[in-house]
Image (cartoon, rainbow, N blue to C red; front, side):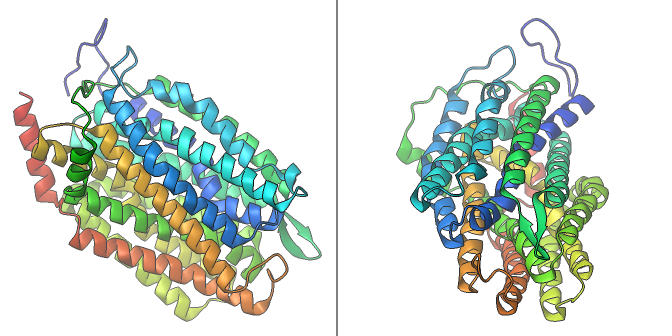
Length: 464
């Protein structure tokens, strides 16, 4: 793509610096996001003594706040004027500190002996500050930025792949390293250490700031995205969003994907130490899943999507992941590393969709522009971001409630009947979630390979 002149000189052509920079952006995001989805429920039940049901309800209740903050932030981004650094990048620099500090405050084990009401209030306040306010104010501009980095659909797919690589590396650091450091052996049982979790959260917060700043310095915005100066009509906006079948389809798929994926990650914190008695196997599962993403999904997702279509690839891969977990439920492997094998195969299934999903969002933005004549990157991404948070909350809330339904408490954590229930949940949650993703993409999401190519050609014609 030709360089554009921008305030004093030519912008370098799209290249490896942009891909690495965009990778670091999601690396920074997931240092706090994956920590929350994988360990917050475990931390508050086992260290702070809050019931799993209450933790799940707080996570779900926070999404009511997101319904306001996400769309508001999307509008702020759409209506902001470009600066010398671009329209979206400046938010990374502004908000990296607040989001990191808020994440660290969630995991304060020094408050474990405080009154129950204080602990619930602390959890709710810090979680909302982190997820509903600060994470929103950095994640929406970051996600929207992809369409300003390049207009080429193949290059956008590459950004999506590198974003997934960043998330995978963060998952590797958190999923492999955290269980090895955070758990201690007490009376022959694997127990989560509160003080170690606080330390880990602090280290990851610092790492998040570093990654955000690397993203800010490496990525360049090339496609002019002017401020949306149209008068805000809430009714028209809501009507437009609800008529956008592509957006509704990707929202449904995203919610269900997170139910499946975060269900896998969240239940790993219970099935490995409680059912299998092996925190080492939990670490191995994260390492194997991350390796599969880096060695299989990342190198081949873009090629397969280019050949068959992103929608088409995602349907097959998610259906395969669901089938693998059904087999695991029926086989019920006794060896923890056999379970790791099933986990890894299923992760490959969801991994292909998770690799191309960010490019699918830009397809949705393009489709809306073709139909409406208005480009609303921030607003559409904000609605999608809200949907992902709904998926995160649904996963955490559902996991907490289902754990409570099988009788899980601090006292019954190693009861054989309870741990068997944990194993069954660890298979059923992702199997149902991934099967539902495949159905949502097949019957709701309309952007086939042919339609995406038609939209790209139409927008290119309009911009000549």
